[in-house]
Length: 102
Image (cartoon, rainbow, N blue to C red; front, side, top):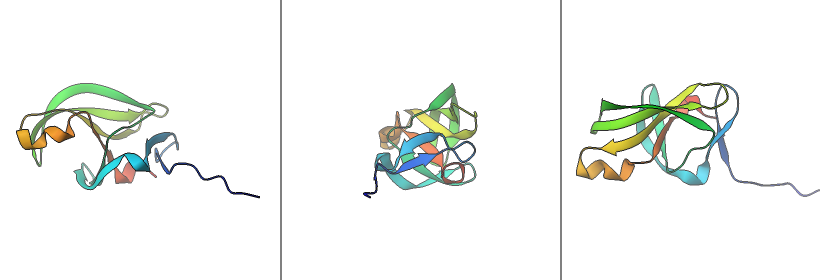
């Protein structure tokens, strides 16, 4: 019997809802609130909270927390706006914390 092989997925640590594809990882070298975070170009099955200006390691950014759409676990944040020119590449991208995804 042939094994079905699909895309590698990341899921919410709490309810196993699919939230991101491995192929959408841009970088694994980011810092989350509680340890390492992965920068993704896209995330799915999430809800986006209100925007807020937040001072981060790389400067001031407008971000919105992102939650699993099923269990509402806080997974990370979405970069809405970067104030520094060198950080503009993050706009529209997502940080998902390694400790929150499997």
